[in-house]
Length: 145
Image (tube, rainbow, N blue to C red):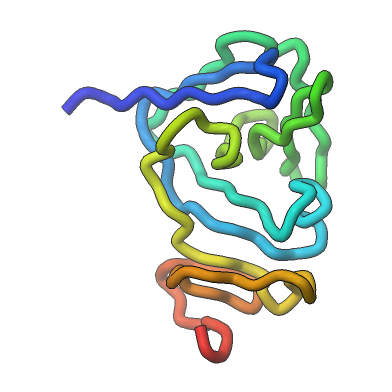
């Protein structure tokens, strides 16, 4: 089976990337930091699968990295401000689902940090919900989830 090709970019289309492979562990984080970083109710993020190859196509020089600590950070377009990716120790770890062109091939599997979600947020769908950190393999869901 041939690798799939996913493409994406920022709002102003100055920064573009492609992935040969797939994404995994899609999640929405509802913590206060992600709400601020993504200017919304939550983040929508998926990790690169171990066999995926990521590359910047254009605009890598416009990418700014905001380091959040412990080797982790977020990459965003310095021109339009779109949050594009998460990085760990300088390497792209995952991508924001909203910046991928078309179907990313994954759906949100879990909502994390729902105990600190915004009071105006309503989480729909049937993805598992976790009060704090979550894992598909763990069973520490929130009440009623």
